[in-house]
Length: 551
Image (cartoon, rainbow, N blue to C red; front, side, top):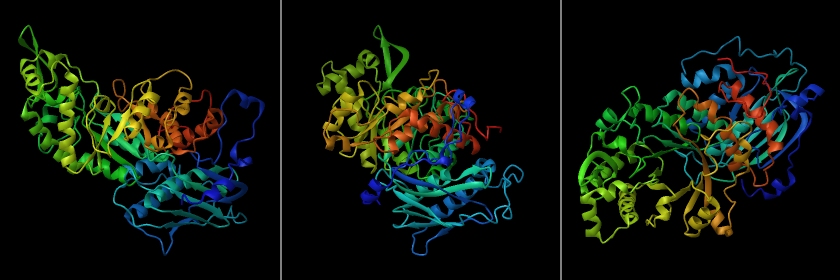
């Protein structure tokens, strides 16, 4: 698919009269949305004014006879048919497949008799080249092409994941129209992501977020072609993961037993994500950020004051073999529960004060020849942990401190840069030959009044001094929504559509950088979210959507 370089040059981004509503003098006071424009911006798109009506009684998906097929494609076609034609009922359907369609709200605006003299799009032919993979990976091919002509359209993709991305774009091309009910324009698209890792972190330790809300977030991610859910599941505040090996961890570490993710919950979430081509990368951060781990199991460092224990605890205790025996068993379980190749090991913000105060740790430092350099103790701890995780067959992602502190890691390690100045850190990490993610400029939990998404949109993972080889090591980035002031009541409205601007930065071509050009498309995308039942907040100032949120 990516060999179609000539077509990329020939195709131009063209807006016709269907792209924006006609403006009148009053419209200058609010943002006017585009119509039928996809988000993120495809690599190449050409549209014409030729319209086709789209009606549920006349349209169907068709899998090409020579195409690969699988349960993922079958379920995707079912979902997208409902998403296109029954948007008001769609969210209830995916959260509860036994729910029924709202026949009144979702009734087509036009009958087939009304459209008897109108050219109709009757089918989308889907063709997938390669056999379906069971789960998406960092290396998955998400490229696709769409051609809409006459009464049929064609979607071609190398993989099932590209087909799912193409179906999402196809759903964006169909728009409500006063004359046709639903319409699509003659269109040709060649598309693929600029970066392979387009992630979103949610923190479920500081505030618990229900599985239902996490699934709504995954649906929102899919709508913007984000493909990695970074599940920051535990932290100091609570341990909501129900461990098979250590059930008392959540028994004592969760806020209460209503704030726990069961094994069934997690399996359901992973399957929901898989159906949308989204990887679930879980994070068990250590040695810091582990206070909730130590409420049952004695793995934390005992802090001392005046030569005596003070009933406070610090990071995990690297001086005891029992700490690593626990971690071996814990990560062996994690490796079986979470199918993605990568586990995020954290490794950030380790406070050395408690280690310094503990006589057993001091003796261990002397025994190991570390002197008074406690960064060497942290290095020792992380080296043991990465070896443990590596022995399970998993790869790992880490926060940048692991590399800053000279821990030896595997060649396929993914390093997440979150501190400023991020251009210097990106240059340093990629010079060492590691694959790298950027999240520094995409901390969505820092909220400011106005169009704060513009700053996210302007940030670019290639904004550093490095060779072409170094920049190829940057595999993408992540938007982060930390949970100090976020829970199920506000996580969706606070995250979306702001995270969608990060999604476009990580998907679209490097020259798609103009926030003024993006604004009307983002406005349409926000309205698209509302129509699909996702309460995305206004981010562009005064505006309105034809389908306001009313659920």
